[in-house]
Length: 249
Ligand SMILES: [Zn+2]
Image (cartoon, rainbow, N blue to C red; front, top):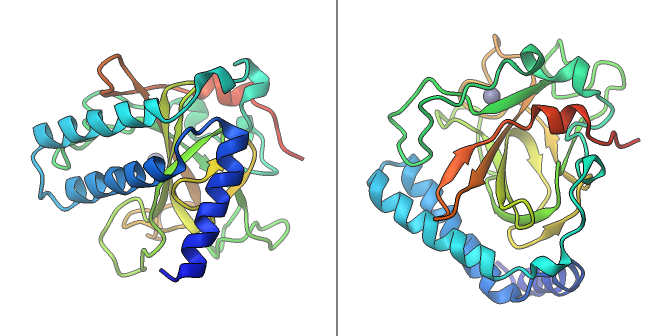
């Protein structure tokens, strides 16, 4: 990365950190790179599930410590913004919420399959060109809640066998939850950045081994994990929050 690039990121930290309650932008950046490496190591099966869990818990304790929770706003339905612009929850959430299947989920073990602790949000894109069939425009993915962008992937290629494609992890320190936005065409946020609910974070796409296949309609995969006391992650069903979330005009 160039000096200019680093300066730009630090500027984002300074501005967004001050607004958001992030106490240490430098440490946040360090924790972001550790978080990303854990995800990559899990994906590549170069870390055992037990070691991955310990590393994950440590870094999430650190993320908790860099945020001043006095800055948290009240959590009611106005806290949440529906994460796909110009779509309503009822028309777009897969299976009216029945796509959420948390049983057997293990973030740390790539060999455990079958669960889907997430909601898929579908759009009108019959010709699968990543553009809305009504407007011929890209479809914006919005932050569902405020939080720190902790990791991103933006280099997925159509011949890759990696799942998830171009993804974003966001940690909301007020809810103490992680949000994973997958299958994006274009990720436009940076690790360490603070986002508000409703901020554009990506353009929807079909990236990911399964999402790219013809049989898969274009969608956003949004997984939510609640951290318990020891910072281990549990799937959380956000269907009701989505139904009652604000719609960004
Ligand atoms: Zn999904």
